[in-house]
Image (cartoon, rainbow, N blue to C red):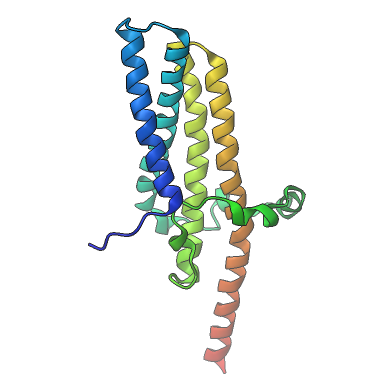
Length: 195
């Protein structure tokens, strides 16, 4: 099986998870063994745990959604374009900042390496993944029931949700353009068949 080279974003996520796992283990060991029972140590460990939880679940659900990627369609309620969207994208200047956003797997969106239909399916999967990520972010608020400090979980939840929102906007901004190209090609093929 051909091993693909990881993107910079994928490597960064792996490094962040590994560093946070080490920080989390060290902090929890120091705090819960009583070696260094300090609030700052506990909250550093909790923050590292939250990062590992959020990034780890994101990666896992990304694998799970791959199994039904082909069943996703622009006709499904979640993916339908809404009337207000184009105006929102102009207000948020999505076109200006979207090229600077990190991409976990840039090759999956490359039209030279994939068909337009494959890129469209990847866009749908990516959007679904980021909607799931929004729910994962909200679920971190439940950890306040264990450790208290609701504010820490609220801040990480909001930051994570804003982070994922940018990718939802990008997918929804780009998808109608790909759809138009696909539909244009279908019309041209249909005309050639009838000619």
